[in-house]
Image 1 (spheres, rainbow, N blue to C red):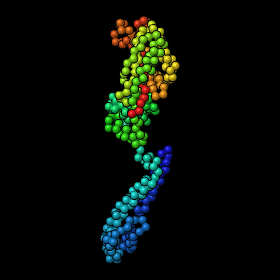
Image 2: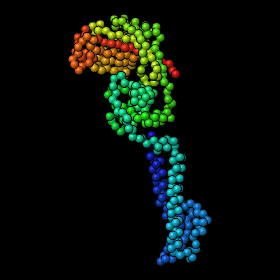
Image 3: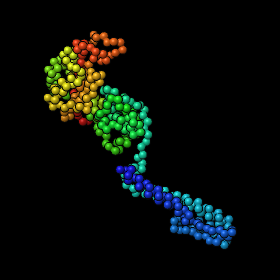
Image 4: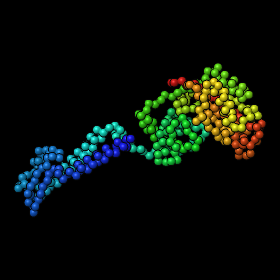
Length: 350
């Protein structure tokens, strides 16, 4: 929209300046010299800057001043008038720009600059923008700089994917991490446009609620559960000192009888859905043929983050060069194990 408004405005400005430049021949001192005789000297007062008495005093009567002096004075006059004309042209342009709507002025000065990435990073499993900002920029809340840099880069480089939701990035996306100076500039520009949200501190669910969840999962999955307190990561607005209650278990697949990690996720969803939690399917991620699965459950101002990891039992010898997770699907159920982590927290505003 800005470009549509600005374009005709800029064109009109250029046309006016060109017209003003064309009028130079009628500005200032004009003279005619025929066979060395000055026939006429006059000033055109309609367009040029006002001359001082000293300027006018330099011009003597045409019948007294010799031709070479008149010629010299004409040259000096043209130089003065050219300077004046340039000044008036730029003054006119300044007035037109200042008088333009704010949207036009914004379009004139907001030309996109080429962004240089300090790091071109390919998103991996369990990556969040806040985690990348903490790693490369030293501040979890600096993630908007990565969003802005990536989006600007995506305009000129199709390898980069435009980020429309900072909470959702996908494995394989290429993001642009700017250097510290560029990041500060991008953050300052965004601070002017939108107020910076306060960081959100997440705290563990009440002990009784966490124990009730653990009991429901233990009954559904036929395993025992442990409860601990651990760091809580998630959306970019999470403060670095956030914590959650973590419900964990590790058991043989003979107990779970799961084809893959999605089967276990579905069992966990049944338990949480019965208690008012909803699974955000956009957050669900699977890797290594779904032996590794993650997902988020939300209810009001609370969130649970689930991670399921399939791996070979500790006593199993996998082929050299393969991890337990890599040889997981080649093993019988009694040699397969699943570890479940469910970390739940409630949001409180600083």
